[in-house]
Every structure is written in C-alpha cells, then in structure tokens.
Length: 281
Ligand code: DGL
Image (cartoon, rainbow, N blue to C red):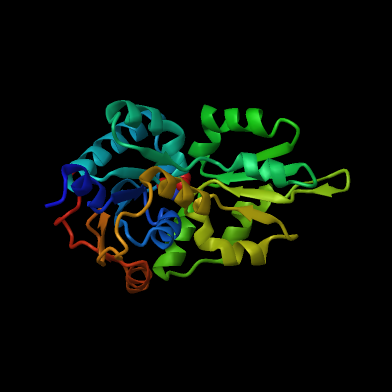
C-alpha cells in the first residue's frame, strides 16, 4: 500500500489551457511536447470570440464565469490563460478567486524583445484590447524605456488566423495591411523585433515572415510559457505518457472544420461533441 503522500505525488497532473479561440493551441503545443506525462484539456471560448473587441468589464465577467465552469468540470492542477487579451486583465481576479490554483498567463514578451533589439526599434503586435491595457503600457515603461516602441492593435489578425487554421481562404493583402504599422524606419534604423502579443498570431508565422518588408525576429513567448508550466508542476511523477486524445472544448458547440480537426488530432486533441462538455455559460 503506498503511503498517502506517494498517492498524491503519483497522481497524474492536469493542466487546462484556455483561450478565446484556437490561438491558445500555439501555447498548448509546446506544453504537450515538454510534458508528455500531463493530462491536458484545451478550452476555446469561441462563443465569445474575439475577446479583443469586448469591453474590459464584459471580458472580466465572461472569463470568470467560463473558467469557473471549466475548473469545476475538469479539476485542473494548473490553468494557462493562453490569451494576452484576457491575461492582461483577469489574472489578478482569478488568482484572488482560486488562491490554491496556479494560473500561468500569457502577456506581451516586451522584455526579451527589448533585450534582443539591436536597432532599439521594436513593435508589439496585439489585439486592440491588449494595446489599450495599462498592463501592456507598464511593461513598455519598465522594460523598453530606451526603445522606440510601437504598439499595433490589429483589429482583424486574430480572426484571419482562425480562418487560416480552419482551412478557409485568407488574402495576403489582408495580413499585410494588419502588420504594416509594425515596420518603422527612423534615422537609418529599422524595426528588428516584433512581439507576437496574441496567441493567434504564431499560426500565421509563415505568411508573416513572407510578407514582412524586411527580415525581423517575431518574438513568440510560448516555449517560455511551457517551461513555466513545467517548473510549477514539478518533475513528472510518471514515466508514462498521458493517454490521448485529450478533450478540446468549444463553447459555441460548433463542430471544427476538417482541417482544424486534423490540426487538433496532431496535437493529441479531439473536439468534444457539441453540448456534451461545453460550458453552458
Ligand atoms: N488569442 C487572444 C490573445 O492572445 C486574442 C484573440 C481574441 O481577440 O479573442 O490575445
């Protein structure tokens, strides 16, 4: 008979990865790769996508309600808010509501971008919501004070990324228009670091690189987030790989397109049937 503490140590850890849509899959992927022993759940609040267009009060209320239902249903040991638009606002109230549950947020990777910039011109590409946050402005003040920083709130880029991953047609010219303000030239210097401050944007990394008017580094914090999750959950207690597929919850209950289904399968996920696991809120 194992002692009580061995039982606790050997229990499989479960992490819930949450976003407004399928952008959080760019964070889910390195977590699943770093910790194959973890039992994972992906949840997309696509009924309320895009979060970037919601008022701050509506967003706090919505994320509070939907995460409460998910936490109740899945009893995770850790929650990743894989959404900059939400993290820059809701982390404090969530931590206050669940003091024993670790929350890992995704916030704009301004510090590493400023540290790496040679030209001292950087841009932060985000949703209009993230650009408007005090949180984002404080990061700029604290970590990029000596950089020329441009905040770009791209109104349509997250939706274009959703379409891209679902296999729907996306025009290069629409992507190019959204990213154009990120590219700044001043006194012979040019932007050299662009922070991808929305988890949807790495989905578009191939067109982003192709459409950039000059080569830049696109900074994606997802691998660092996976390392943080790993550190918080401690060493894997089991040598075994968690049994797949993991559930992917879509609050709208809409079935994923065939291309998205394929992408989910590659990540070890399967969409739960409409209504079966989807929160009612
Ligand atoms: N994926 C979300 C983020 O990281 C934003 C998408 C949305 O507007 O809902 O900010």
